[in-house]
Length: 234
Length: 320
Image 1 (tube, rainbow over the protein chains, first blue to last red):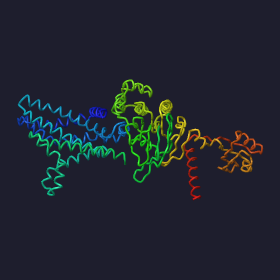
Image 2 (spheres, rainbow over the protein chains, first blue to last red):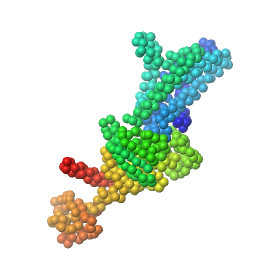
Image 3 (cartoon, each protein chain N blue to C red):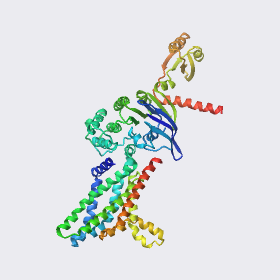
Image 4 (cartoon, chains in turn blue, orange):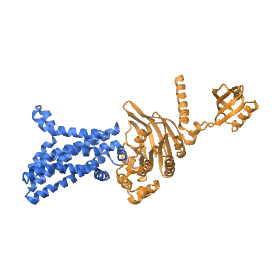
């Protein structure tokens, strides 16, 4: 697993994908940072993070393609599947590599915290809570991207599917109030992933939200493992 | 070393591999021969555990590839038809990744260097794989399969797409590797397989139609006793049948200028050709051409074997 993690992580930064990922995240957050903190003269980063959630719509498909779609296309998955490693190890290796890229991107956003700290007094608790929320939210979205990338070996479709699925998830909170069937409502609200993030932003460190996000990640990682296994059994 | 029992793979309604069984001993170099679409790659993919089988069993060194995949896969080095290369990596870096992936315990640097020397990659070890020529990429594929010194090497069409010089090199390499490993290689070129393999398995439409030692198999399909004959004269057919050295005659062509062409199957008599030409010239027949037919192509062996196979089937139908 470590070998796969290391190789994948390096490969993100041997191609424009890793850098694009970091650049897009920084750019989108930068725009909100200028609006709320520079022009609005606020010292809280909440609004920046809250508004930046949409960025996942663009960066997750970017990672998603690289994770499994490309391997299936170029048949490099042959070396992984015929090596003495298990499918869960392969999938986790790939997932953690993508998470590591996300981690690097998040580290670069600390520059905004530093700027705030230089010119004002940021609320440390709030920032930590927001970062933890953002990490969990990203991990959940990336796990969805991972699953989608296992479904196709067509790179264009891979991007399209991830984009559409994420778009639907973002639109869910808008639709939810109009869904009257209680069962359907419960199911849909489970899938409206970005919803629970807002509690972190307000500095509420809810255990239920943390467990929820970890469950989402585990759910999609397991689905991916099944999906890769299924490919071999077809 | 490798034991395959009733291995079957179905893709939906299509049966790609149909109940094949064979056994390969330690240190054998076995050729898998068949036309495109015969099921060679599917079989190899199942042997390596890349895809699963619909039914049947594959044992590698006593380990079932589906039940004990990790133990079985440790014994295998696989070179697929398209080498699975991460083309954005450098050669050494890539081989290092494979070393880690296969969890090899050795002196990493030395292990990789030895293999690179063996396949001739030392000069390009710091080049990015995608910038290498097809021949070198194939060598990287070989190196990847060799990492960890697996007992079994499975090579799927290792010489496809290479130029003649590279083919010779790769063949030499396979011969070399055959000394220390059990090797299975697939090809649709007979010459390639008969040059390096001690045993041949011929498959067609997912079933094994012949499996034997290379020499025995070539003999079976041998056309060495066949000669093509172009003559001018009268009553040649009757004369041939009386000559005492001929088993079978097929008339191929008769031209207006009086020349005739025959395919003659001679009997076991070692002086067959001599006796034949002597007897023909004694009767005043002019021999324009007399040539031994050579068996060199898969097409002939294959046609020969499949023809036999089909007659057998027809016979059994009639009996039934």
